[in-house]
Image (cartoon, rainbow over all chains, first blue to last red; front, top):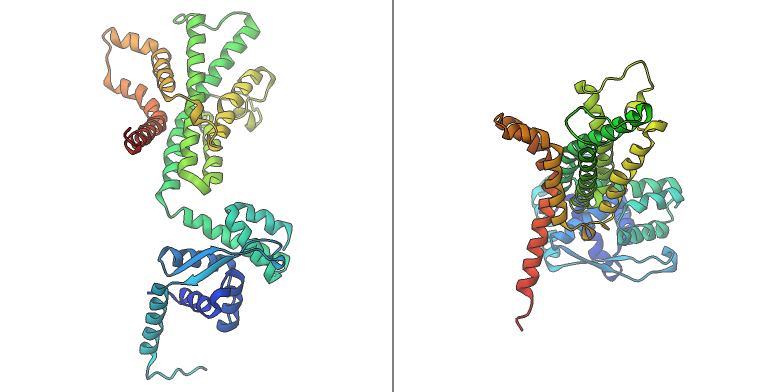
Length: 103
Length: 275
């Protein structure tokens, strides 16, 4: 089963679609989860997800904004989508009927 | 993104370095933040490396055990050269305890020097193969162990006594004028093969068979008197193990390299098309 941060990465990559790469995923996670996302945590998680077969990565094109450096593009695999769905369903089931009181 | 971040990124593989520096440039991270981002990734990568058995094997087997015995042999050779040079410098004669001739001593030292050179190179090569991206640390420790542990062991065990009150560093570094030749030997026998072995330039240049012959020659020459005495009726198995064990502990990377070469040759032979 996915971990919390793994789920955030897979969700961000799925949301970005064909434009999913390191910097974009980092910004997406920071925007949606309202938490900081370090490059170190992001890339070690991407490596782990790729070794599990949940995402695929490949080298993308270089842009001027990146100083002519290449991107690492990310795509969620079918297995990755199933794992993310399973995680979401588990969290939904586990929290059904609960009303968290935030003090 | 500042120079410090770019410099720290050198610890990453070239492909990953390109990607990470590109991401940081695109995010327009300020200098200090970019540095800590890169540093965090480098540290995570290093921690991941050490979750494998390979760098531990290199650290304990090569840098620890082999390095320690290489250092003792090297210290013995350096001391031998120093004694001969000092005796010649002060008295104009060859240092002789009445057992070996000058020719025997020269042969012993040459064999030992050649074997230490080859052993160090092969050990460094095995260190590189098993350490991979942890090489900067295991290589540094290998250098420190080979450089210092032999002299430290000699001091701690009492076989070398420092008289007077010389600066502490004179015990470890042959930097005084009478020691200049041993210092040159140090560079040639030790630093050069470590650099060649860790940079991956050396193994193909060392025929392992020659190395093993050299090791056998050293084993015979270096302990010729012990062997002669033992063959005269004073056979002591424990003494034999004390002679052979250091060579076995230093030589195991040689046999590892040899067995891997044989395995690769066998694989090539089997995978070659039958014509």
